[in-house]
Length: 289
Image (cartoon, rainbow, N blue to C red; front, side, top):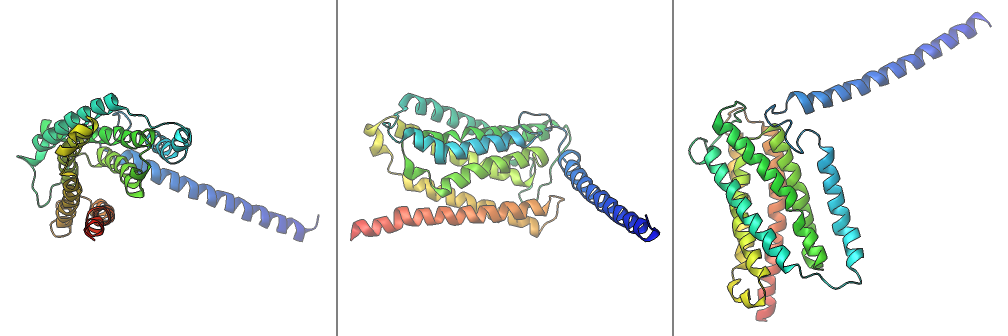
């Protein structure tokens, strides 16, 4: 082998080794950055709690949920009669009302009634009993968002296909993700007002669903259905206004999280507003004509 050929081979091998080494270092950097973010910035109090440490179980739950509600479930029910599920829905809605009351109460007692600043509230990562109470309430809220996926499952089994809208699927899929982020990194502080307000709205909402599940004879008591949507729209406006304060006041709460929360809430607000207009404003005009 000539010297020129040997030099060329050495150059190629060296260049190849450099690529492999560079790529390896790049992968290592990404992996290390991910591990640092996932493990070193988490709240150590909540890290080992159920369905908190690893995002994969939640992603599996949500993937299964979407697959069932959009493909598998409708296919199974295609040639079947709708299931009534009256007793199941009654029990489910009672449980949801009770759980929502508990989360609402714990959110107030864990900070928002006596201890929190409504302008700007940082996360207390200490083992203070009040701080741990709020962290536990955030985890309860996270569990509740996962259980609420059954809302859509029941719609599919009852063949209420009109209820399985993009708004419904988007809202029910994203809320567990937001709650997981909250309990893993921010189980307290400014962003938890969302869960408190949302739990209050759900007390009213699942009370309505409970009455609706009792049968047609209770329909006359459900005249306030459209006000549920109004209440949800108002909650989103309050959440956006409250979150926006962090761009004026600084209390060491991560603004990037508030920006993401705010953008998502604005999007959901637009979807709910469009739903309200289509369901109650335009339909009322059509009926009047």
